[in-house]
Image (cartoon, rainbow, N blue to C red; front, side):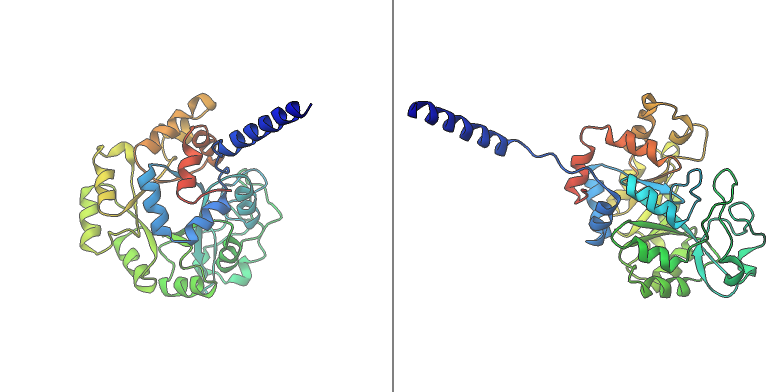
Length: 317
């Protein structure tokens, strides 16, 4: 009997040691995990994404769906509770210098209001109900930029699409007021706009269109090319050596999965089409904004090494 118990004990010890030795699977990534990794240093996170050759998906305009309008706080909350993404959102400025989330410079498409934003006061805009993608009014109203950035702290990494009319000094003041300057990125449209933003926020991670070598040379001449530059590219329109050139200069490629009939968002019908997203990621952009973040994330997670690569960059659950 004693021998039997000794054998059982030895077997239990062996099983326990095998379980302990088994490799642990990394936690599934989350939006909050991306935010935590970014808070430790966005340039460092971008460098790791380049090294691991892994891409993060972004929810364009926050990931709108029926009953969830673009750039609404409820939409941002829903998207980040379900998907490991960064959030691409938009800022507009009113006549009385209030910054709030909205894509268009006018109101009719996505609110129940009418008029041009920079000609209107915030008091006129604040109570307006937002429309969803089908044009139906919802219960939600436009959020202030400051409120959105407060909410995002610890929840989401933000890429803010800075519309050209936005005053960079006012933007920097708002960003600093909520302590968000080191936990977000900024999308600009011209070298002049990027320089103005960097003047106000010298350590800002700034996105700029760099579609070709001419654009890269211009960005270099303007002093914008470093590890805090997101180079907006169209991968299908550049040769295979261009994105490695960007990375050699310290920049990170940013692209979208929308915008044409041959883009992943357009061609995706079933999971069999996931390769369209894989192909885009393999071309080199490490940040990919998508109008179909659910499908894009599913495609990424289907790759066996995706979760492990993100974990190496500090992105977990």
